[in-house]
Image (cartoon, rainbow, N blue to C red; front, side, top):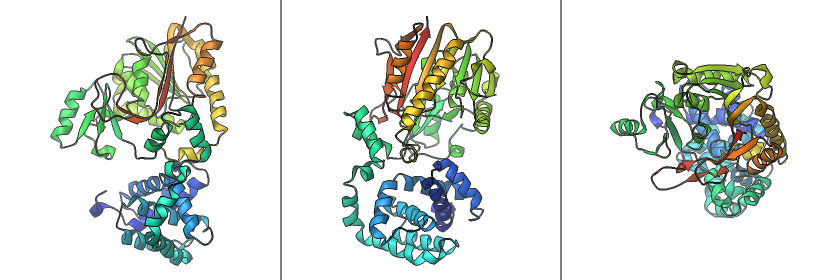
Length: 447
């Protein structure tokens, strides 16, 4: 962020600390940030929310290290408000996003500006200064613990290693880093080659990483992405873009996008074919985001789209009489494949969530299969790396359904595809994207 136009660091630290306290109480980071922005009167600076978000996300990527550091540096655990401010300030010192002296000074100023932390300003000052004195000796020791090194609870590490023993550590290491900014080029409006030329003319470094996917080498706000407001591009991971491609909807088909929010895949389906499309989402606020994405990309101009607020597992309330030719089920899951975008996930999940979500996924598959027309296809997708939600779920469904045939996603390939988070340092030459998050795909045809 440009320091000249950035809000006071103390204000951003205060908002981030309020969000951190809510996160540690069990609220997702995005919801915690929204609540913190509403609860704190830190000033009207237009970049305050973005600055606080950056600080909170940075701290969350180092949550285990911060916890270990505070436990080592403090004689006794601080209360929630004080610990939260110390945590987000430590996150800035660990990431070295600002000069050390500036972080300490602004953290003390933030403490003095809030009644809940004012009396602990001296404690904040002493803890941060002690970290700076002992950092070089302390950091290597703390990083010996796998939970700190990979920033995830022990049970999470064990599950990933059991599922993918050969690649687990590489996946875990990648997921603790900030994510790339990947765009989907709207083929109704432009081409990948033309858009890359446009970026080059604007001095923005980028490369193609998938069939319609372009990665910006330096992330930027959406309002600074050429063509975003006009619908020329959308922000979407290259792996996620495969779902609409694998579904293979063609002109004139009736298509269901189940669990559709925030609408990226809905808009992409409309970009790929002239279809009749139902997008179902149970959360009314998230359904509104679908409409926003469809409006920005002008999807209604070439597809008949209904956005339905309802339970995807109750298709009798929304499915047309003839059913659907294609169904995209992007099912709720642990989101274990997109941790680098949501670093709070390992800390909010519990071990029994995997089984509970697998049960929900199974219920959705069973509910939607009857409204798939004969010879129709259903694509099951989860942004997970856990086999209980991926391959085991797909094999169990196929075994229980005599009229379900698994369709290979590419010629000669296995019937299912598990993508693990990856960044390949080579140009895309076709096939699997070179930069993507973790997803599982299974395509079934009704026989």
